[in-house]
Image (cartoon, rainbow, N blue to C red; front, side, top):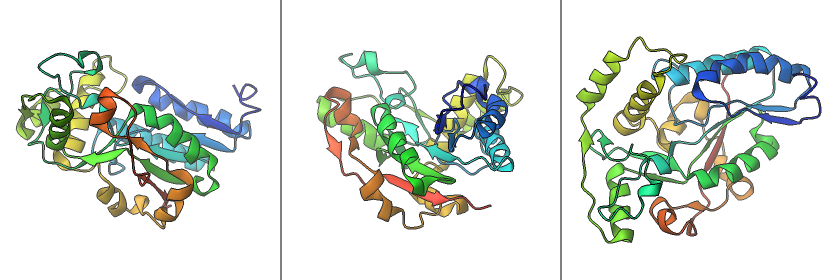
Length: 261
């Protein structure tokens, strides 16, 4: 593997959930190959580093291993995915875009969360890894911040349809997670647990927003606004992108911060 990576300046790991921990094996080969920047699979909502949800714990274990190797890196988080928030319209006209996860909103639908459109991610990541100021830093990228009730409001406005609103009480999420507490990241049925943990994180606890990113010590903005003109670019509004994928919103949505060792 080291030989295969020998001519690469940047390695970006895009791995399925079950293979997240395998980056501990990839990192030494990347270091030995002289790669100048390793971007591990993180691409997740903002969260405290440990004890909040299982997948983040594993990603932090990978990051700690990278640091022990003194391997240059950039950690990129993206909030929650726009595409996973869309509910069905009564007319069915966006059914091909609906994942099913947006049919019931975690909590009361009033928690602010950062979302990213998947069509933005490639451009965001490219700009982040090419900028020398993001080396050995966390970068938080997002397309917009909304509550789920605001997502529904936007979708109703652009579609002209009324969307039924259903909610998942916090107690129900807690009960589901209690049932799945012994499931590990290697288990075939880990995905439902991950979904419930994510829903608690961004829909109930309110961890996934810019304000919390700034609060967490390892996410201090440290002049991030000075970077916007060089890194940021226009991104897609969730509701409008659902229908046209053309409207841009102001390019003010990339934060970068130093890692606190």
